[in-house]
Amino acid sequence: MDEEPTKSRSKSNMLINAGLVAGLVILILGQIILFRFTTQQRTRILDSMREGSANTADAGITFASSAVQLVSCSDDDLSDAVALIRPAVVNIDVVSPDVGPAGKRSSSTLNFDMPPSGTLKTNEETLGSGVIVDARGYILTCYHLTKEHPKAYVTLFGSNRNTYKADVVEVDIANDLALLRIHPDSPIPVARLANSDMVKITDTVLTIGSPFGFEHTVTAGIVSDNKRNIVIGARIYHDLFQTDASVNRGSAGGALINSEGEVIGINTAIASTSGYFSGISFAIPINKARSLLLKTIED
Image 1 (cartoon, rainbow, N blue to C red):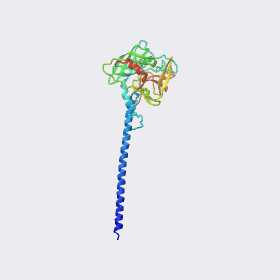
Image 2: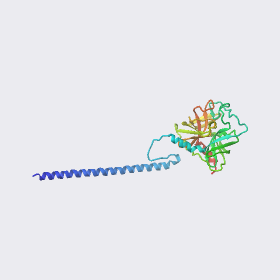
Image 3: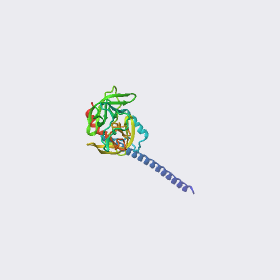
Image 4: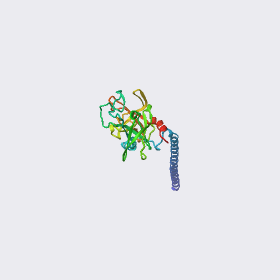
């Protein structure tokens, strides 16, 4: 008598189990299909990003990785940046008949980096700094350092301290730039130049120069303005970087660099009533030097 209900329950259980198995299979297949769809979408996005990177390479836009990350500038980053640029920053000294206090400059609020006479003297022949931009001996510095000095000597700092006589080969007075050349016996380290149009306000920056003759002095700050116009004497200098990185006598002509160790500017002037750094310095964006370099440096 109980045989029919038992068979009925057995069939019902089999149907339920079959339904569960089918549902599980469908769920697994759905997950597989979704995973493949997501992977394909991600691949298409990455391909699009790579194509965009190639199309915008001339604009200096690159994609460093497939993931968007927030990054910060650590002390290790800055240490690496300085290590990259230090060998390419040089000291420029002068020898002229009227060497003496570097002195007599305008007392206006904006001054080049020379202090008034009678102030701190550590090395009166130290004129400033420069940046090696070509391994054959081309060095970029400030025009105002060289205009009154017919002779200059450049000192390189490496495993050996070598000094060379330098010739001024070209100047850009409007941008306060000068290109020197020495004739080294062997290839010399060269600075990497950045696209200074990419510099933003609040970017971390470093300066390297020889304030008061203390070569390879490093200071740090941020970009306070990336298009500052200033007046020195009767001349207007346009679209300079303003920073709070310390610049003093001997620092002019040295490198303003980013956290990658690339040169973004050449330090040129300070805002000060005393002739010493008081919190505001200015640098010439390196892109302003590109036409001078292309015109002058031999192929």
